Length: 364
Image 1: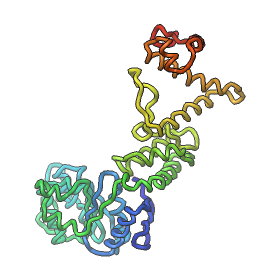
Image 2: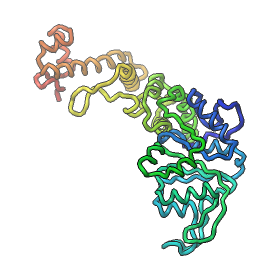
Image 3: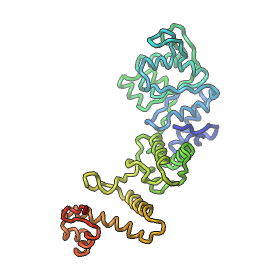
Image 4: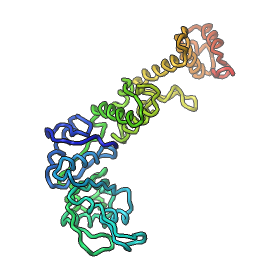
């Protein structure tokens, strides 16, 4: 996720510069973040994957008295137990195969600063004991060494799981949980702060326009409506991904609904691979109709005077084709279904080169 800029002081519930969102649920996050930042307390950040836990951790660091010290990030879920222990505490030469020199760990690197332990729930019970010692005593030993090292690092941890449930399941130490959970900050999922979607879209548009030398400066209302209505299981990270894709794929200066993945737009076309109708919502129908019209205009020459028939005939042909299929090619039934005269239908079948004897397939 891109860095959203530097932070500064402000009213307790006001947005923190560098973090997008002004919804009431985010105002509560800002209040707790500002309040806890100036303390020495451990912080536990909770929230689903992709909500921006690292951004809040960074804000706590920037607003704290340790802002001039290092901010060290560790993803505990990305490494095996042995590698994670070495990453956190360092090792001495010969501690294990491949340890050809002494190495400083992340806790040493975070001295007089902040260490952010993301996905703390993925650590083993054995490693949790060592983490507890650092939190309580401020000291540890490198892997393979007996020398005790002191570390003055503030610990901010994050989890995408309910740690209390992990404690009950005996996958997480209760004493470490209470030591970490001095001040919890729970970040709401994007679906619970939909009023922030528009601002996030604007931010990511600006960011990826600059990054890719593009100029997608407008958002189609139907696209923004689809983005606002989507349930966002991947949260802000998912939104970021879709906006980046749209900026890269856009041919003009507008983010249109057809640039969004089907999970968001809901527009799947009029028929699936097996010829059966797909289900689309009424809200999607307007976007689909617009896409058909825009495509027709795009294909027509600038001086063309038959744009109406180009577009309307295309739609009418498809309507007749689908109704003929539905009626097994029986023209009388199809005419009744369409609400037109049978002779009129027969003429249109001929004009559009449709073979009603083959369930409405086009004549090749």
